Length: 177
Image (tube, rainbow, N blue to C red; front, side, top):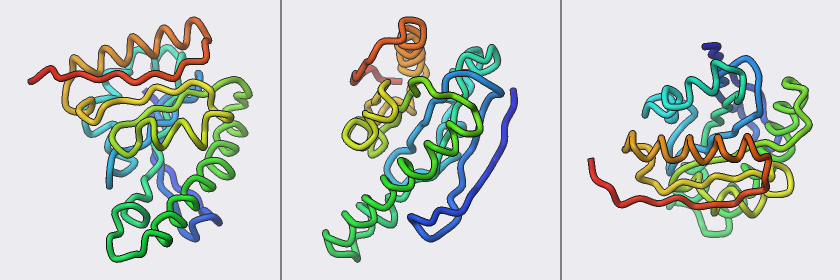
């Protein structure tokens, strides 16, 4: 499977932003990390392996950007206003820099998929990105911990890819290890 660790300068954030790319072609999937997580999290918790067959067949190409939570909502030393401003800067980075980069490099002009856990879930995804991405699969924060849960998400993602529907869904589980 193709893998590339990348970074690029973000004018919106004023710093280099790392991200990983998994796959050679397919519908772009942006996976936001959980609270305080980073661009390696999805792979480190086995979620890339759970998606491997889709990636290797060229059905999806996964992009895992770094979070900015430690500079925004988790930066408790900042005022609420400064936290919100940092969060908005991250949204602008995704909307104005990362999504256009993905569209340009992949030559993909159709719908994209976005997913994530915890702070990367529906709150982060639905509001600012819905008009850009259209297909959103938010996860409960326990999703990174349970292999069974990841299979539920993969099946939902497969249905979304095959039917090309506009879907905004939240999948939760209370299943233990």
